[in-house]
Length: 417
Length: 137
Image (cartoon, rainbow over all chains, first blue to last red; front, side, top):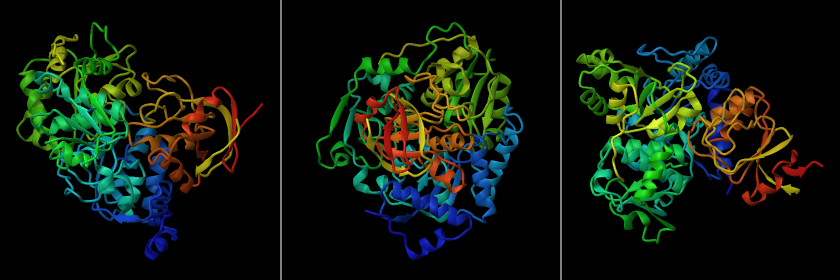
């Protein structure tokens, strides 16, 4: 089936301006994906404003020069700078200037200055069943799975192009029949205490991503709703280790009231029965620095911390002084609340470095340190920190991260799977 | 080992030593956009450089910024000589689509069954404008 553009879409594509460029990029992607047409979208989340090099800045500025602006609500994912001035970014000129120009270009295109990878906790929650074009792997998976809105995994540049023309290629997860589960990921053999623990979700997400790849699965054997932050952690880890755009949890996520419904009456193509050994192995696989005697930093907040997660952090620190810096990455939406009641100041007095608008794996914040060891409770940080920061990682619960930051060496509490 | 591959994204014909990845990769966080070196320590081809190679990709995972990394490689002249994929990759190939729209030179991306990848390992491979893959002697 070849792509059919409406006369209006064809006229836009034939122009010389920014909208024409956006339309051609969307149409070219649609052809590559064998989409028959473009469909209207209700909103976008833009992952393209993070500086990876000059090419992305030049592209965004070309759109601005061409007079383009977004046609639908568009929030921005993280950038490479902390515009709130909470943390010091070590990005040097000329890269720093190019990163700033890029962020400025996206502002001029009409995007909201949200600068967060958790837009869904910053007031951007599309309605269940609506079609949207979201980028950022964790935001995509949350939007599809937890909110039940429909998006494909939009890559950088297609997200802004879709936002400008207000349309997206009609394929994949925009179609209800492509959203049903084909694989069952059964966690019922794991201990209730493990499933109730915070580490269960990043660990299982990492395992799920590796096992499922891009196949849509349904998690079974979860008795209680684990909470939104747990689903956020599961999705982020799954979207790091696999090409996961949508998962279901029977009895928890909106499209899966029960396993039969989400399987659409069909037999699953595969059933993965997760054993305690598999979970233990997946947990170990999140660490690359198993025999470390010291740690140099702790990083949390990938995806960006919610206020509830800051509450937990504060409770665990309990006013103590940390021996190593603890980087707490969040969005300005959470920062505003933290500022109001002096909580930011008390966290910083303990040795917490709040990072806003960005995070420690996307831009240089932590010192360059040969043999540096980073502890984290984030499956996503655990996945990307070695390649992006040079630090090796130790994966642990938030409680163990805090105790280790106080002690300056890794401390682990055993939680049997 | 000659094959006619379907063109996914047109571009400049290319030639280079084949680099057959044995596991899917996330370009963002997995490939250094400045040098083209595979930076993911957990990837089996960690340390290899994709610049100038004919890159056989069994699939991509992870970040939606793969497109940005590939476009930056193209802009820096550190892109692979050609990309060979098992199936169209909506995220990665955007990097080529947008770079073309910007008027920059880009390598071709072609589609070939995964089963044929191994036969090219270590060879000097040429990808012609019509998508034909040939092994140079």
